[in-house]
Image 1: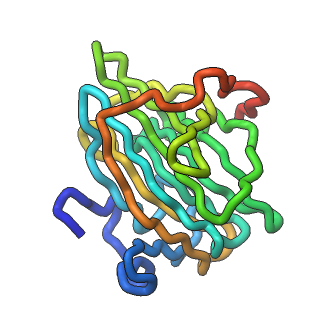
Image 2: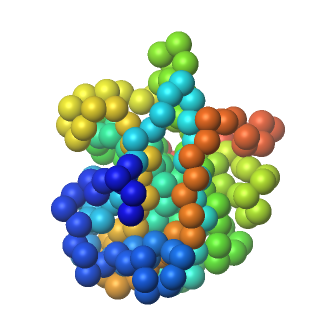
Length: 205
């Protein structure tokens, strides 16, 4: 991988691969984690100002119950959009942590309708607004925002600033995997459907 990529923890090289499915990054869960904060093999790249977006094409057809996989705007006060699998059913959720790193908000789940989904994180640093938002798409062109806005807060708990993070972790049983076809960075944000009401039906934890 290029030098722009860094692992958040020391990687376990048994559980990531660029060769098991050529042209894809495979992330396999090798241990159980309580949250993204202690998940292994989270792959990071710095966000860019004044605005930037990170988008992935994610194949989730081999997830297991309890798995969580997606893209994050990552610091201790993180937010992410992810696919979760519970009871054999895959759903899209957006989550946001408070300043203590504990999840403070979880959106109402949206049933996933395909094995491949596009996930997007937008970050806005203009005029020190420092917010992140998240969206999903089934075609890479028409986006629907999910969840609320993350106020990005800066401390040195992990590193300086925020990073885009690609992740897949297990909460019950390791062994599932996801395949990332590509990751793309752009300076364009705000492509999500403006008529969507992202906080409707939200669940607060």
